[in-house]
Length: 114
Length: 113
Image (cartoon, rainbow over the protein chains, first blue to last red):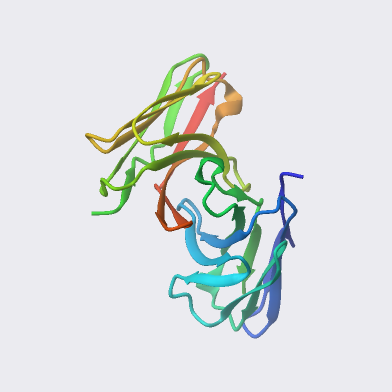
C-alpha cells in the first residue's frame, strides 16, 4: 500500500462548526505532515509529526488543532474557522531520514468555510 | 529573497516539444532537490529526486542540479497532453532526521495536441 488516504474529499462548514479532517497511511512512515494550499499557490507547511510527536508547528492559529493518535493516523480538528481558511488541505507522510523517497501526498480535502 | 523562486508561467507547448522548467534557490547548504507534479484537484506526486549536483534521467524526464549557480531544472522530452499539470520544484530543508519541504510557486504546463 503506497497511498495516503484523506477523508472527506470535500467539506463545507460554517464559521461556528467543529469538524475534523482525517489522514491514514500504511507505508510504515513515521513522519506525517499537514499542508495548506490556496488556489494557484504552492503547499505551505502547517504541522509536522515525527514518531507521533508534534515536532513543527508553523505558527498556525489555534483554531487548527492537529492530533496523531498512532503511527498510521493523523487528524486535523477545525473550530471557528474563517472564510480565508478555505483551501485544499494536504496530508503527507515520509520516513524520517530517508529523503530520497520524498513525501507521499494524499489527494487532499477541499475545505470551504461559509 | 524567497528561498525558492519559480516562474509560475503558464507555459503552453505543442505536443512533442521539449519542455524546460526551472527554479533558483538561495541557500547553498540545500542538498535534496525534488520535482513534484500536481494535476488539478489532486495532491502533488513525486516525479524526480536529485541529491547534490548532477543529472538524473527517468524515461522522458531529466532533472538537473547546478549547485554552483543554485539552479535546478526539469526537462521533459516528447511532451504529451497527459503531461499537462502544475510542476512544483521542492527543496528539502532538514535538521537531523527531520525535514521540511520548501516548494516553489509551481509552473502550470499545458501541452496542446
